[in-house]
Image (cartoon, rainbow, N blue to C red; front, side):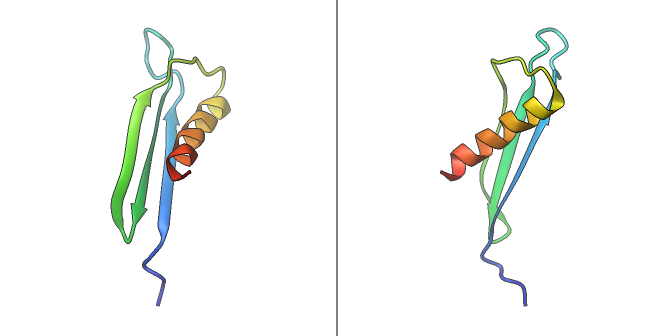
Length: 67
C-alpha cells in the first residue's frame, strides 16, 4: 500500500504570457493526503529572459511556501 501522507508540490510558469508587458505568470499547488493545502498564481514583476528563468521563478515561489 502506498503511503497516503505525502506532501506533493507542482510548479509551472507561462513565459512572457502577458502579450502587452511580456511578463510571466508563475504558479504552484501543494497537496497533502490528496487534498490541496496551498496554491498561488500571479504575474511576476520581473521579466524573465528565457523559459528556464520563468520555470525557476515558479519553483522558487513553491519552495518559499514549503519553507
